[in-house]
Image (cartoon, rainbow, N blue to C red; front, side):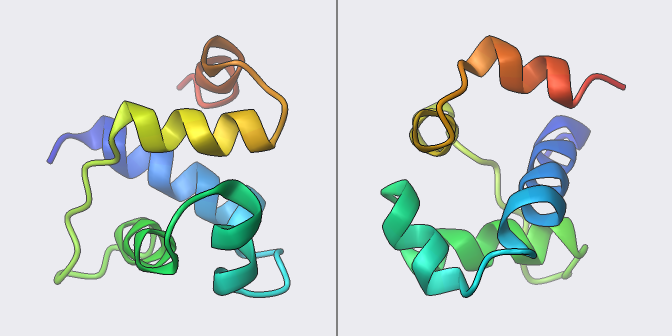
Length: 79
């Protein structure tokens, strides 16, 4: 897994999932399974069991729910 997926997962977790009422609620509100939310969290927290390479289509679902374009998201995570 490349560093880009780690950066994406870390941003999503730290800015959106961590502050949400629950992982399940985040998944429901963003059109993704709770198991995907857990994979994002585990990758963000550098859990050795998780090496989630987030698909563009999953990232797009999250961005659509946040009312931002993918291009705007990538500007948020510029490093």
